[in-house]
Amino acid sequence: MSVLNKDFLWGGAIAANQVEGAYKADGKGLSLVDLLPAGDERKEPLFNPANALNQQFDYYPSHESIDFYHRYKEDIKLFAEMGFKALRLSISWPRIFPNGDESEPNEDGLAFYDELFDTLEHYGIEPIVTINHFDTPYYLAEQYGGWYNRQTIDYFVNYATVLFKRYSKRVKYWITHNEINMILHIPYIGGGLIIKDTDHKEQIMYQAAHHQLVASSLATKIAKEIDPTNQIGCMLAAGDVYPNTCNPVDIMAALKKNREQYIFIDVQARGEYPSYSKRLFDELGININKAVGDDELLKQYTVDYISFSYYSSRLESGDDEVNKHKEAGNAFASLKNPYLEASNWGWQIDPVGLRVTMNQIYDRYQKPLFIVENGLGEIDEVSEDGKIHDSYRIKYLSEHLTQMKEAVKDGVPLLGYTSWGCIDIVSAGSGEMKKRYGYIYVDRDNRGNGSLNRIRKDSFYWYQNVINSNGEDLSY
Ligand code: P53
Image 1 (cartoon, rainbow, N blue to C red):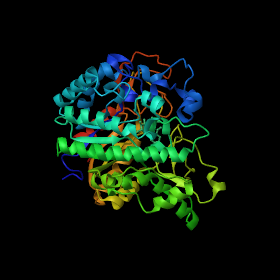
Image 2: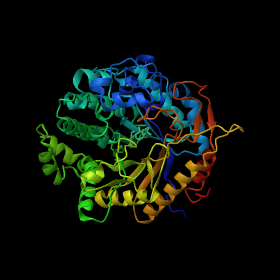
Image 3: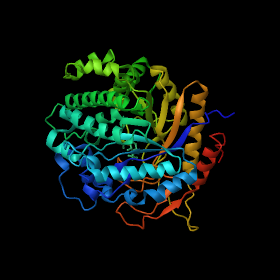
Image 4: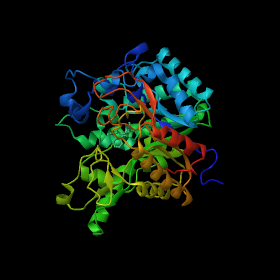
C-alpha cells in the first residue's frame, strides 16, 4: 500500500503564454506577454505598464517561446515517457477570441487544442485546463480596461462556454483563473490592468478581482449545466506567511498577510466575502461595486477543489522598519528567513512550508487540494557528456514530495501533483529562459539563440521512477 491513492494525478504544468510561441499564427491575437521583453528590461513594463509598455524592445521571448505550438507532439511523447498521468496546461484566450470581444470563436485556434487533446488522450494523460493563465487578450486590456470593466465578465463567460461545449468530453478538471490573488501583485498579467500613477490602485485591483470571482462562478454554473461531471477549481498562489518573531504584533501581521492571499479563495470556496473584508476595504478606502445577484451567484457556485502553487513560505513583521528589509526576490516580497536557503533568484526553499500550507488550506476549506505548481527555477548547464546533472532540482523536489506525503498522512485529501515547467519555458516574472524548472532541457537562451532541441535531464529519469513507484521511492 502506498501513501498516495493509485489514481493520484502525477504530472507537470505549463501555460500557453509561456510555451506556445507562434504568437500570430492562425489568427491569434496579442497576449499581454507578447509586449514584454526579457531580463532586467521586463520589470518596468510588467509592473508599470502605463508608463513603460509601449516601447519598442529588440527581443520578445513569447513570440517564439519554446515553440510548443509546433512541437507539442514530441514534447507530450516525452511527458508520456516519464509516465505522466496528467498535464496541466492553459488555453490561450486570444487564440480563441483574438481581441476578446468577438461573438464567434476562431475555429483554427479551437482546432489546435482538439489535436492537442487527441495527443494527450493517445497517451492516457488527463488534461487539467486553466482557462485564464495570465492571458486576457491584450485588446481587452487596452480598449476596455481589462478586468476592471464589468463587460469582461461577459467576454470571459462566452469564451469559457465555447471551451466547455467543445472539450467537456475530453476535459474533466478545469481551473478558471490562474493564481487569482496575483492580481494584487502583478495586475497587468493577472487582470489585464494598465494602472496609472494617478489611479486608486487598490480600488481597481479589488474591483477587477470581484469581476473575476463573478466570472468564475458564472463559468462554474455553465460548466455544470453542460456536463455535471465537470470539476471546477480555483487557484491560489500559496505559501504560508510566517511571523518574523513570536512577538504578538508579528503574529497579527502575518495573519493579515495570509488573509491577503486567502480573501479570494474564501469567496470561491465558501461562497462569500469573509467578515474581515469589510474592515480591510474601509481601511483601503475602497468600495466594491456589485451588481444585483452577484452575492447569490457567488454563494451558489463555489468550487469543487482548491488548486494552488507553492514555491516558498514568506516572512512578515509587524514593524514597518523591519519590513523595509524585505527582499524583492519575486512578486512576493519577503523578509529573509535565517533557517532557509534561497535559489539564485532569491526564492527561499522551504519543503516543510508545503506541509504547513497544505494543512492550513485544508483546515480552512475542507475541499480536496491539487498542487498544480511547485519546483525550482535554476541555472542548468549542459555538461561535457552532453547531459544535465540537475541534482539540486532532484533534491528540491524530493524534499517537497516527502512533505507533501506527510500532509496526506495528516489527512489532507490531494488529487495530484503537477510540477511547474516540466519542460523548460519562459519565466513569467523575468522573461528569461535561463531560469529553468524542467525535467527536459530546451536549447534556447535569454536572447532567443539556440536549436530548441530537447534533452532529458537527470531529473527526468528520477521523476520517472517517482511516478512509477507512486511516490514511494523518492531517493536520490
Ligand atoms: P517565474 C511569482 C511568485 C509566485 C508565483 O514564476 C508566480 C510568480 C510570477 O513571477 O507565478 C507562477 O516564471 C505562475 C507561473 C510562473 C511561475 O509561478 O517568474 O503561475 O506562470 O511561471 C514561476 O519563475
